[in-house]
Length: 416
Ligand code: LLP
Image 1 (cartoon, rainbow, N blue to C red):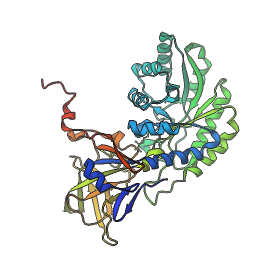
Image 2: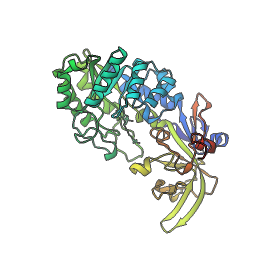
Image 3: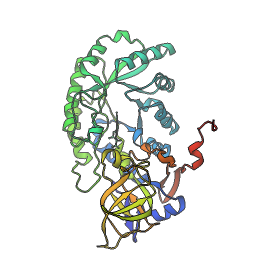
């Protein structure tokens, strides 16, 4: 993993650019990304799976900023999208439509039609009803669409229960028996070509064993159904968020998958759908201290961001490293909870962290915030969402403006 945020001359910097300087220029809260880390993560993932020569489809849900998508496209990425909105983002980033995989458990007719209109490469279909609707829409247009079945392999990985998707009782994918039955009556779907299978059993998958088991189920399916030439392995590649996280490096995670699939490389094309692995370490959320309080539970540091801009700690109890932007003196650390301004008692970014003495105006950085940070942000408590900047080759570019108070009422009808 590339770790672009490090102290230089007493100041936390992103690829050499001090975060305090970026915060002065752009204000806080501020998402800061490293283009070098993005590229390094992409290169490392591609190298780990190189024997399979996969199409790497970046999972747009993890970060939909068009400038980041554009850089990934330049590296050779396609895109895994799950909505018409993500299709719009991928096309805005200049993606070739045939390198887009349209996944998602609840695509509407309008979204399927937009995918057909754009001629996306693949529809990863998750239900018989979606299949029938897609067939009808494609037939009405006089066109054809290429389909992969998202299989539910009934394999549970070891990860947080909110981000497991492979189990038989989850809402995701087609049960195997139903997928077989649909394939057997393919004549009912004359506007569709069934060419692939897709799995995605969860996110932060702790070891590749579960993925290998799910892939074995998938390979059995491929052998039983004629005409399948593409296998989409999904995403879920793990990233450590703290020193004690015991996740394998991507090379070790990939090795048993590559070993299993290498004999198939002549017959199958492969897709991957990484989100977190590519962007997580590339981003940090910079925030300014507003107040420090001594409460019965200890020191609480209130900052200008929280669950509305980084939901993961509140939603999943997720751990994100929080560090002071000005490098603390050795031994100057004491415990603190870090909380946001939102009127919810779950609005904490971290509990019991080691931080220096802090005053209003001091800055903190929440690390590993590049994935599922901005993309899950909201306007709760009528808080504008942060700006985003990209550090690239020594330059700092604003890649998304900070929302304003006026933006918050822009779509409201004039008061009625
Ligand atoms: N493909 C499919 C079909 C997915 O559902 C997902 C993630 C991915 C790929 C990308 O997974 P990744 O490589 O990023 O693990 N909000 C949660 C994660 C939810 C993931 C949902 N699906 C979090 O913040 O941890």
